[in-house]
Amino acid sequence: MISKINSSITLIILFIISPVGYIFSQEEITRQELKDHIQFLANDSLNGRFPGTVENKMVVDYLKNDFTANGIFYDLQEFTARLKGDNSEVKTWNVIGFIEGEDPKLKNEIIVLGAHYDHLGVKEGSIYNGADDNASGTAALLEIAEKVKANQKLLKRSILLIAFGAEEQGLLGSAYFVDHPTIPLDSIKLMINMDMVGHLNEENHVYMGGAGTFPGGMQLMDSLGIPNQVKPIVHAGSVAGSDHVSFYNKGISVLGIHTGGHDHYHKPTDDIENLNLDGEVKVLNYIYSALMAIATSKREMKFIPQD
Image (cartoon, rainbow, N blue to C red; front, side):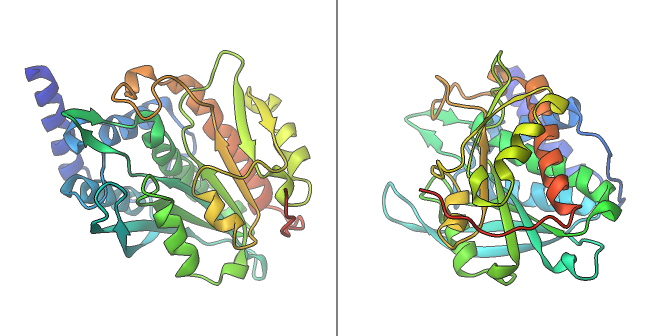
């Protein structure tokens, strides 16, 4: 118990004193940085990242600091979340980063990369750390954002990075964003959502829905598997379950990416020790490849509804 407390204190101190005065974006997604992010986000000291808590705000500050450290412009979108349990209302935020494309015309077209950062809090004395759900996706957002920023000159289209609040309360952060967008909704050509990407299995399966919602999506997502050492399980539709649904319902093309269900889902055992970090690096490189294939090209992007 003492070692766990000391570990929590160390993580909080590192978060407080971590330098944000310099700008340095790393060109590779690394296991160590990924692990560092998840260790902070899924630490007992954050009490399950529940909306409306001090710990939830600490996560918001962590995201802000990381964007700043990598030279990424950010903004906060505050909203009120109505909680499922007692129907009370709390204040929380979407954390929004922006990396502008270089093409004079296409930079006005936006690709959204998103992940929710909240989880279930504390129940009956047990902390629900949500290492896979969704510290894994939040860490993915930060790592991919850093690599995109390092390669910004390659971009034609612009990238909007959104860490959503209160997803576990009913997709509230993404619903608020699409109803109160910070950019014109019709400028968003694709939303890629990452929710539970830390449990790559022995077959290296990466699952996704929505690949048929934009031209050539099925072929693109399948073709990127071998170069990134993963085996995509690609569905044209199957748009359900997480924040990308809010965008799809507004007529926006989406990809919802995950590594599948497991026995630790929504349990106190969803801890970093049960993640496949080496596997997640593969998944992140796969997602980065897909993002850049679209953001660096002039390929046609339009919404194709799916059943």
